[in-house]
Length: 135
Image 1 (cartoon, rainbow, N blue to C red):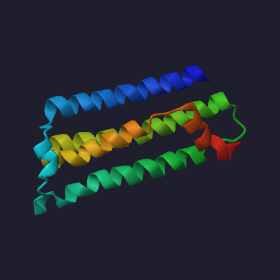
Image 2: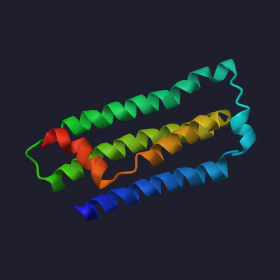
Image 3: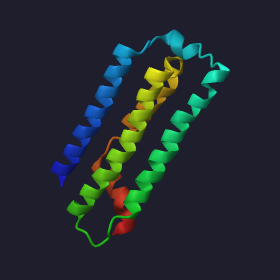
């Protein structure tokens, strides 16, 4: 079991590191870009991207977790959990990339998505909590 969790943690780390690297090299990361966020009316629709990514990723994650058959072994459940996690992370990563390349002025919201993605690091305890209702 720990081998599958380590694999999932490695994938998560790679996603976070890649996204962080993109923000460091492609973004204008400075304290000024975080303190002086000025949003033009034309950028307002883009504020929905991080909110939609957060809501959609959590909705789909829970949807796929609920679809896991309770009769499966824990190892098989981990595989299904990995699929649900990858979908969740991909949505958050995609939204962060859209923000950095389409609206670099909203870089602070992209950084918030990266922080949230890092928070979602899979641990054995967190996986068991998510799969608890299936037992």
